Image 1 (cartoon, rainbow, N blue to C red):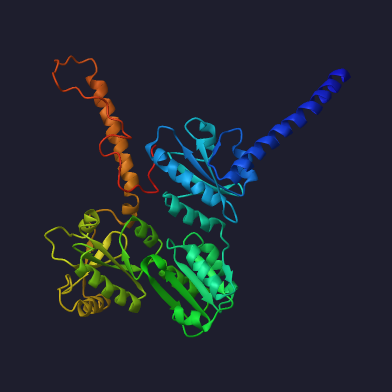
Image 2 (image 1 turned 120 degrees about the vertical axis):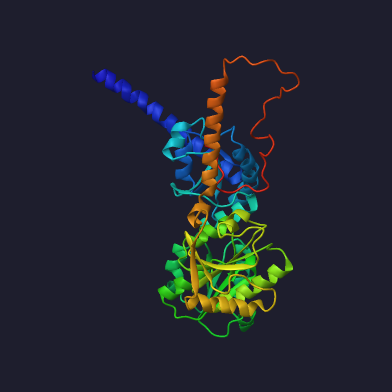
Length: 438
């Protein structure tokens, strides 16, 4: 018995160093690939080692046959060296979830691709953009400090330039960091936050504020900014920050509807024929002016041409006189203002003021939307995927029922199979972050 124990110990004394050497060798390989900025290919043998040894890992759980995955792959190849070169590197990795099903199941992978960022080993679902340039800017936020401290005019300019245009920016001039740090943590995924502790009068002129403390909100993608002079209490600060996630006049689309789902304000919705027309652009400027004076409301617009299904839920079709204004609760109800249902071409600013006056005085008629609510529109893509599954199942059942039936031979009607990834209608001009294949 003693001899067997001694032999076992002797064997372990050789095996353990070898296994440790192999493990460290694997880790070293991962780190070498990390520094080279390549997309790591992980599996069940090295996945846990990777997420524990690398602080930030962006993982693509994919399937080789998945069309969306094939489209995403080159975008990740472009983004990988850029993210690896950050001061706080982010490594991009891939897992064949169709092959390594146990690993996929552990991390709740229910469709392809499923994207997650592992921060110090803790996974967070990623629902952001997939184009390489936008993905890089989005992921930068995960490794950026909650509040950037800016000590000069040049530091402010560099902060604004590096932040890009994808997110709103908040710069506190003469604002104590502790005043906004809690909200910066809460809304880190939605905006950039900074505090300028030293700046010139020229910068005050540039950002159009005349006293401190002041919190400047920038929305670069819409070329808009707002100034907040206080009071610097959390309640009022949060209200200002949340109101400035969106532009003064909000274009209605799937992305802005997601943001609006967290906003409890009523939505003054203007429906136009075509958002791009000069007359519509002129009206949008008037809506921005109205929004500046009515912060308790969200002002939005949509073109019938741009999103006909959405406009249809408010009783608008090609025969409707436009522009039309309603007040929507963001759910299943909206109201029209008696005598101000539509806008005439002349003096639209006065007509908007009359509409708001009628709304606040209660001269309204209540209606129910004829289609999905705001949440319904957000989830509509999921419903579309479900419909695809149902259609596929019905098609398979019909095929099974027809097997064995004798059909007369037909001449000149045979067609080869159509690949779902390359067939007609497979490629869309735009593909959204939520697109997956089950």
